[in-house]
Image 1: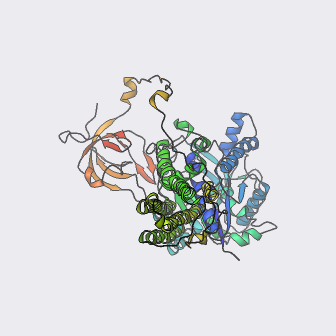
Image 2 (image 1 turned 90 degrees about the horizontal axis):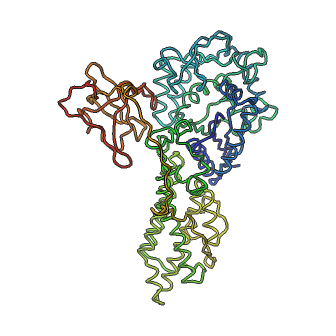
Image 3 (image 1 turned 90 degrees about the vertical axis):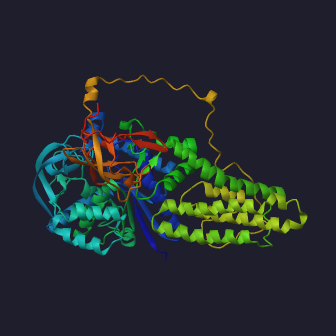
Length: 631
């Protein structure tokens, strides 16, 4: 019996269209699921949608439809997007499905009957878009610390879940299971910022709206957010249903893959719920970073930078998009998405390295051996090194994937591709072909190249869903989906007939100047002196500067403005070493609303100029006193 592997992504809130950043998590989970299947695991891969809440109710009312009609339309689009990305999920759970609803009601009643849920009254500040309650001390300038929007005072009868009862038990568990929360920085944040300071009991019902799962014994209440949403991971498996076969087989989950903004809910609220239900905890929760655009800007329609993911797929191919998402972003850290970078990766790695290797190999076998793969009759130092690179790289791919370092695993695959291209340059088959006495040497070179490509086609299957089959077709072999076949060099049968096909990845050429369409003229939007006066620019002296743990972009500054000191985060780690800026006087936006980045508050902004590979902060003459106004 094969070993089981249960992997989940967060269920998405259908409040609007998904962008390329949302796709990132699901594509990453899909690559892990595909890898585990190739390794022989019995994989169950779950995704879905979280469809209840006040925000959905309000949006549906504004659209003139029922909440169910509103979410049905959006969920249909999400399912279509997953299909266009070749997401291989085994199940898709909707929190409006009966299989989920009835179990949530059973869980609520079970926790109530055992005293872990009690009735009380809640009074606090509530953010509708984030569906989160906040204490006064947690607000930033009186607004939601997560989204910066207005909050409103809410006072209503509610049921509460006893988070505080299990606080010490969870701390002990996390300390004894260091692999439970990853990366390490997320674990430290949960312990130091939330658990050790103390937990408050959690509001788990609402009476001020109706779009939710009714509490069976008190139907004026509906189950609120996290007890509804998080339980999908076990309701989808049939927990407390008439058939618990899947639950008994797959739980506990091996991996919850989530965005860093919801790590807190998955590593504090969810495990405590499981403890209260006397169920084992998931083996690991991994909080990945965000995919941002233009060096730090979030992606969305409200930011004016939203492009439907399907457009990228149609323009550059599905595998080009999947490859970029998985290769470009260091897993666990924030990653930057630009169309220019996607094109560069496609041309360099996919078209030049992989595509050309296949095209040249098949073309030479057709030219020199009539399209028939010859037998390898000789050996040479270059072939030995190629085989050693393959052997070493396959081990690295497995090691990196087991550690969820997806980008590094792809880098290991490309080490093989790069070595094979170098092998062509070393052996110079076009020279060997001129000497009939070297026919066997030439045949060996052709065999080694074709065999290398067979192995690469297997190693790429977790990441690229279309390319491996196209490679096998041109190599004249059946689709090879056995992972261990990548570990043995020499399985390709001599006599196999190759057949040259279309380029795997046609090079993306920039349009010539005369072919470029005239860009529409955008009328410049002017501001008044009154608008400008709202921005307070001051000179600040850098007292200290250090890289933010877990980020490859952020630097954390302590800056003196004369009368006060500020902590400011800036995404310029790529352009400066921290020690370079200590003692420098920079221009600061002093009255920018504080914001949290990776859980750390930033109290202003450092001005910089440039873009791409060159970004420079604005440094002021040392004679200008810190705290001076810039005008």
